Image (cartoon, rainbow, N blue to C red; front, side, top):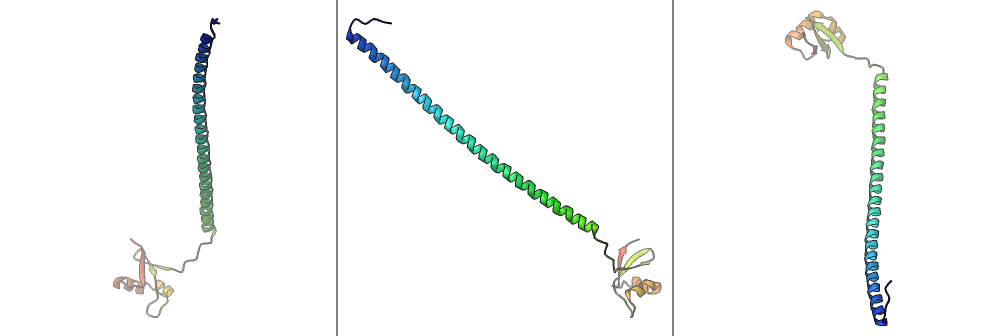
Length: 139
């Protein structure tokens, strides 16, 4: 420690030391303030990211739920179709020269079923291109 011979010299040294201390405290205060602001910004960023992550998780959970519901609906529809008894077809099919035709309506006072059994009539209807027959399976 330095010995002072004069009160004025001691006061000058004290003022100098006090001034340096004040500068260091001010610098420390600014540094502390900057670190506090940086910490607050980091905490805000962290909070924002957490909120965004939560929103994304909620959206994904909702989408997954909707996907599961859609999948279940599709599976139910498939099961209903597979479980449904086959509907009886009221189509009348006749074969002429190895070609299958659907008899759409009766002709000459005959029913569709009667036309399908009459091979001569079927041949004539095919020859004239009658609308009473629709080709369903070709040669």
